[in-house]
Length: 222
Length: 316
Image 1 (cartoon, helix red, strand yellow):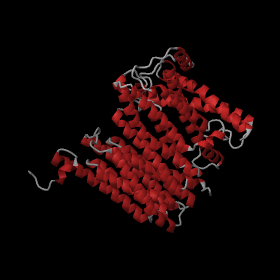
Image 2 (image 1 turned 180 degrees about the horizontal axis):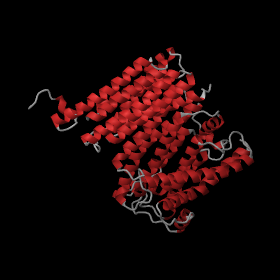
Image 3 (image 1 turned 180 degrees about the vertical axis):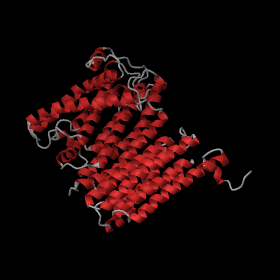
Image 4 (image 1 turned 60 degrees about the horizontal axis):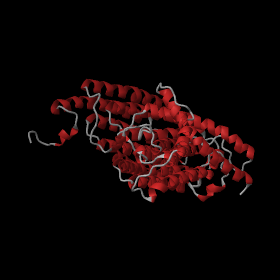
């Protein structure tokens, strides 16, 4: 068995941590801890990008790592926390989700995306290609989180964490996207977050709750 | 079979039998210190076992033979397991008799017989304990098997001594899968040994008991054997964990007498540290409601499966 260089081992470790954090987010009931997990995921992503940059001598990846650190570890969690404080939903607990079942579905998704990633990973020539499966799995898990959650804020966190997964996939398959694209996505996510923040207030004003099941009704006064 | 192998086998069994109550005493002492109580004597479990052996046994009127033979079966299964698990050396002649999967089977045998004996008497608490024990057991076993499969995948063998040999000999590399499997194994061990997040070993409240409720009807030598067997179970689980995840100091390969003797202090130090961490976990966590146990063990199972998947994908 050939031993990988140390930096590749570290990337593998961080990829595994990323997957673990995705599962932790899937199982987390409290909104406040969910945001801490999201920040931790961003941190793992940023560190792993920095290690890829160091290991493969791609200086532009340092920029993406820094961008991730500022945006996803500091700015977005801060924005989300401020929103939660303003909406006064800090102790919001999501009820009625069967966590063990969700986890089992999550495992099936992981197996599926690992299988899906294998042929793609063989085409890639990067040292980090093995982690592509993990990146796809975390995209799938975030998607699952958006489906199973009923409150608005966890859904938005799921959306943001999906972007984390996509970013990780780009890093592992092709050593990151061009800088312009990356900046564009970062701005998109930020603006999206701000607009969704406004939406939260609108939703609550309309329905007196952030539970999105009220939005399934098409007409008022049914 | 070499003479050294025979010697290491005998020494290991003797050490397991002798040290198991000490480990329980140590964990109890650490728990007492951590919760700011004055600690009981380290040798208390030995005194307990001796006292129980000297008493006369009382058996319920309608007890069937199953009730009488269960303590011997449970104790025998734990002794067998202690002979298979490589705690001192990996050169164990007896270990080729059973691999990691059979080891899980041995634990299951002990569990099934204690549950049968608990239901045999027909008291409400016995049946309640037996049901809960099987409930925990059927959730914990797959997780334990997955942990052992992960170790088997990395080393290419299901025989515990070979697994430990390979892991102890490999070059240093970071194995995320082993880290996940280690956490999963810790969670399973807590559940299987009736430790705090799942069961409270020191409880006197019948409604929350699991393991204790099953053995309420036992007395004297039967109870002594069962207590000794549960100490051995804790010892075995600690040794599996230490051997697979921290195999430092174990005499590997066809070893000589000196290496085997030298492995004993290393084992004792590792067990002392492991016991302290067990006490720490128990002090820091609260007992879960029984219907939260599936969530706890489901997480353990999830971690073990993730470990295996990550190992398959990353090859590390």
